[in-house]
Length: 99
Image 1 (cartoon, rainbow, N blue to C red):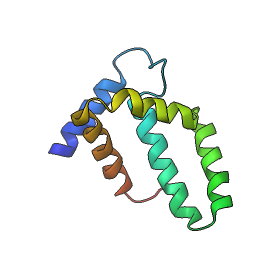
Image 2 (spheres, one colour):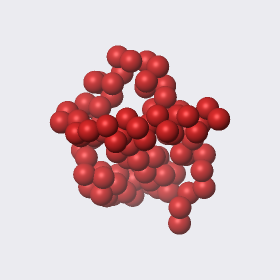
Image 3 (cartoon, helix red, strand yellow):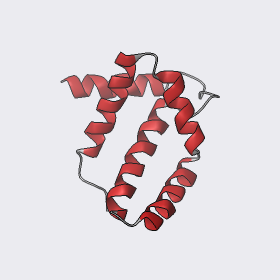
Image 4 (cartoon, one colour):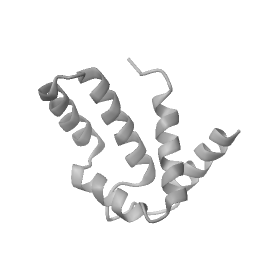
């Protein structure tokens, strides 16, 4: 039930108006971090392969590493909210990896 409530809250926040001009919105941040984690698992210890996958993920999401840092810097003051974001990321990572 807690995860359903979390997902609904994130969906509401993501749909609440204009995109944050200072970086990605919540849904885009979550999607990007999940995709980057999958890229890291795919690449394993191959740093060059991970860098290629990372660049591809960032490009496909339309964000930069700086955008992600900005999101964390602007959102991290609200620890409860950030915990909710990381819980959502964790839940997404526990799902089967799409092929």
